[in-house]
Image 1 (cartoon, rainbow, N blue to C red):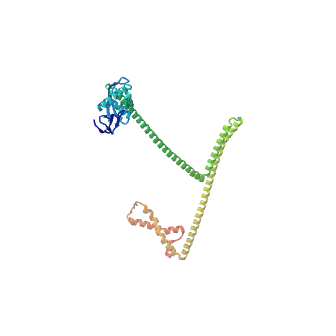
Image 2 (cartoon, rainbow, N blue to C red):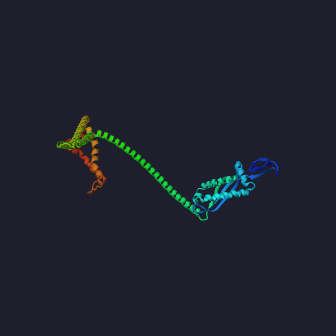
Image 3 (cartoon, rainbow, N blue to C red):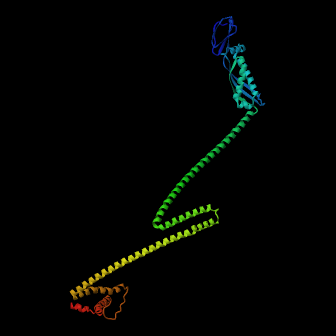
Length: 426
């Protein structure tokens, strides 16, 4: 027997019994003084033990055989004196492997019991629930042995009948189906969003086109209004009577509309009112337009008449002015010629025969030119020679000269003035 102080690590507990102790002294992870012979000291392990709980071929509540493997962590609780005392009563003097086997068998039994009360789907799909139930049931039993279940986790589920595989295939099929449905819905949503986007785009385009058309319409309306204003002013400046006729027609149409309104309000009137309405309608639709048309034609006739009168007056005035101008020109020409003749006469009186000679010399070349002018226009001249005298160009010159020499005789026969005699006298 060891005497003196005895120590242990934090993963152990000392159990001292014998003299001085009514019940064993428990010292977890520390030291204690032990009297030899009268006192006895023992150690118990407080290590955490890992248990792999195998439950092969257990029938579930549906009668389906499956195998389950769980992992549990257990240990003797050293901090709780009561539980440590209980553990000492149960396991003191046993090695750790024996404690391990006792805890393993206990957990395996509870695990099989829980498997038999649940379905395969519950165990497979809700592992947390299964682990919780095994943990709670096993803890209630192991705590009575002074052992605490630190944790429990379901590690694996197996079956030899293919039940889990069928569940997986069904789930896989569901997932694939959901994936296909999701993909189809995604495509549908995408197409819907694309359609909505296209609809919004087309709506924006149509709205833009509508705004453009509206702006174009406003422009055309304003332009038409400006054109109407310009044409109206032009028409007023050029043909005032046509504008007046249009205004008269517009007033007639307004009166016609008023007559129609009155007609609708007097449909329940007596026959006399009906006759009066017809008379007013006849007056509005026949006589007034006829009067208006007559008025327009009269104005057109008056305008044409005025235009013709003004043209005639203008033409008469032009003729008068032109006649006065021609008369003035004739008078001036006559006066000039008379003045010239007077001057010539004075010159003739002053110079006498010398003047006549000078005039004769000035006139003879002109006469010769006038005589020769027809000959210059002839393309071809055929002359016949009788045998003597000049021929060719000389003959033609001789003929012209003979004509010129007969001029004094012609003047003498016409006027009685002997030009040759006057020239010899000079």
